[in-house]
Image 1 (cartoon, helix red, strand yellow):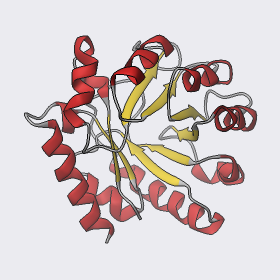
Image 2: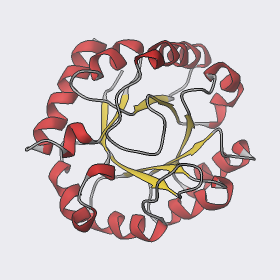
Image 3: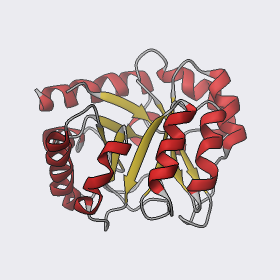
Length: 221
């Protein structure tokens, strides 16, 4: 299982996004961009134009997490803006299979996210349509929240489903991932880790990424 670290810019300085991306270039695998619309979640962040500008300013591929209403309409525009991965929420998508296929057809990896209260078992049939399954380990909408330990059994169940299905599906966790929680996530079966405060709240974001990767790799081995 190859560990991947995707630092989230949600808690970084939005006035310096190019610099923020540069702080983890060469050590991170992705740059995680939380797209919020103040409808699906109670916060407002960035849209496709910012993603387009950021894609031109960094060599890191962009991992766009759409916490928005009507992702069926908007998801393809984020691929066009330069995202390498676009994740939609089960709770928001009205035509998830069609939208996931459109994301792939447009040239990006297709991700599917589940809120804490959403049963992972209900979506086993959709595994063939996705490249990544995201298990939220906090309620979506805000950075800096505490990790929900009660999500670890759900991560384990998701890993069991992926093994049963076969194929190259990544299992991502997002929310409260830090040096205190990443090993438990890796032990449960996650292999892609979104970390915001743990990276951009540190004095040395690059070192934070390297340290988180080392912890996850130890736990996964």
